[in-house]
Every structure is written in C-alpha cells, then in structure tokens.
Image (cartoon, rainbow, N blue to C red; front, side, top):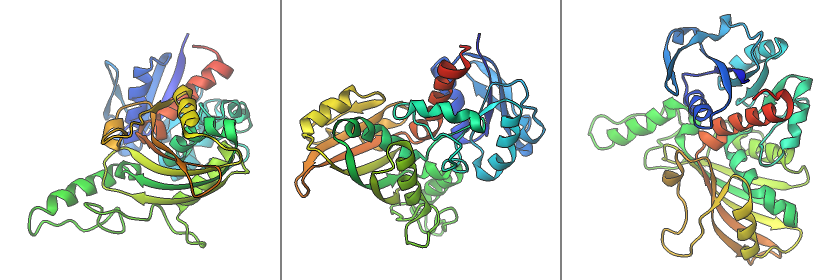
Length: 340
C-alpha cells in the first residue's frame, strides 16, 4: 500500500525535480496530484512514464491526501500550507516560511531524523536552505567525533538557487556579451552575473549580513547544535547548477585530517573525492544530477589549535531542495505513517 502524494509548484525547477526523484527512488505512490497557480492549470507534467495535468492549487482539496511536497515560495505557502495541514495532509515545505518556527521541525534526514517526531504540532515539516543542507550533512559526522566549536563558511552558489529567471539571465547575459548591441541589463540580480561574482544573496540585514547568510547561521544551529558559532559569506557565481562551499571548522578536540577523511567516507549521503593532484576534487559541473554531497580538499588548518578545512559541493536542486524533501517524505512514511 502506497501514499497519496501532492506536489505543489510542479511546473518549477524544484517541483519537477521532486517528481523525477520520487520516480527514481521508487517512492511508494498510489496516487499523485500536481499543482501550480491558475495560469498553469492544464499544463502537462511528466512523472516517470506518466503524463499528469496540473491543477489549480487554489481550488484543490487536500482532504484524504497523505503528504504535500511544497515548492511554491513563502507567500503562496502562507496561504495553502495551513489549509493542507488542517485537512490532515502533512506538508513538507521548501520555502523559508516555517524554518525557524519552534513548532515546526527543520529536518535533514542524515543529520537530525528524530526531529521529525515534532511534525504533529502543526502537521508541517520544513526543508532547510539549500546551502545549509549540504553543509550540515558534512558537519554532522565530524561534530559527533570531535564537537564543533566554530564554522567559517564561504559559499559559491549557482544561479539555479534563484529560480528559472536567474538561470535565463545568466544565459542571456553570456550570449549578449559576444554580440555587440545585445547586452542584457541585470534584472534578477543586482549586478551582471555573467563572468562575474556577486557577494549578495537575498536582502541585507541591519548588521550587514545578508538574509542568506543569516539563514545558514540560524538553520545550522537549529538542525545541528545551538552551541556552534557560525559565520557565513554567501556569493552568487556564474554556474547554472551546483553549490560549492569552502568550510573552515574549529573543534573542541583534535581531529586528524586522515581520521576525518575516513569518518566522512563512512557517513550517509557523502562521497569523498580527495586526491592531492590536479583535478583530484569535485566541482559543481560534476555533481549535477547526483544524490550525494561531495567532500574534497580535507586538510589540517595549522592557524588554530583544532582546525580543518574542506571543500563541499552538491546539486542544490537535489540535496538542497527536492532530494531532501523526498528523503523527509521517506522518513515520515517509515517512522510515522507506515503505509509503504
């Protein structure tokens, strides 16, 4: 016996990826509905060898459905998630709306699976920010061994994190730079993204950090350990898919780089590719379409007593969004609903 699943935001990048991953992982689906805004009603969406027709989320009745995977942004989520939850359908939400709500668990299954038990307070589970998700997967096994005191992370985030319009802008600007008179002015981004990097993701806050940087700090504390100090600098780079992070970690206890490498090799969801030779590491282009979080360039930091550096890369549309959502659904089914 399988589940009745709803995918809301099925016409977007993340929604489509959710459907791909549900099919790839053979999630036990008895019935599936795909939803979007009214303007997409009737659009055809692929799910495995099936073609589904998009329904209007405003008119959809969630009664009798088991889980709804949401990828529709905070404003629409604010309207429809409580409605679905009230109808008895568990919402797994990709927006930032509920992440810091104390009554909503923020879950990365490889890191804090037990947190899912708190879903019943609101019938909602939050999915973390894409940059946070891949980082905590890498930090968790190291934290269990040597206790992390402080993390300094610099991110190199792909434009797909900003949606399809951001991807189009990179493509159009790149083409325009080669054709005189066809240059494309920034619209989605504050500055040119083609052949450039932008040290701003989301809006600035009063302390000078951007909201993306604040998310990494606050979400890491909620998911992993509130005692860990985190500071982040988030940068948008001209890469279509795949987020990269340079992570500096200070531990309470000494952790040798070789032991850290062995620990990460055995950890769930991680692939270690760490050869000290040209090309002996993973880049965003190579991680696209993969489920894993890749870790490379593991090395001691001699400037502090108990420090390590590492390079972390993941497909942000997968582990950072769609894959983590499906993994939460799998965990919910296994631990709570127990149908599949």
